[in-house]
Image (tube, rainbow, N blue to C red; front, side, top):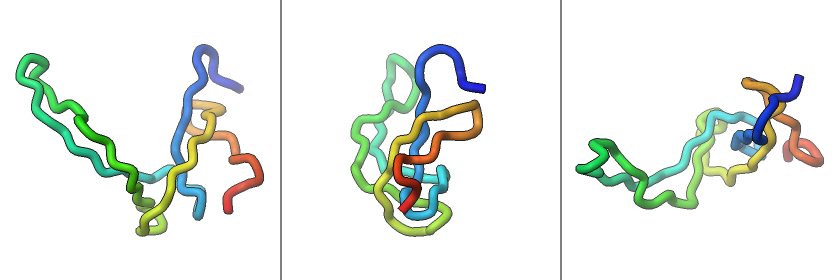
Length: 75
């Protein structure tokens, strides 16, 4: 059953298809908000499943926990 409302996305590793991925970022403390705020989001990504660097592929969520297979499948 598709989600209603705005289209939601996930990011996956195109090598293994896992959505257990991360990116490096630099955060700064915002005194007025009393919270950490992302200052810079770096390009490098890491797949926790492959345990290696990867590029991220954005996919459409088809339910709260699953996503549509990328066009052409996962490499």
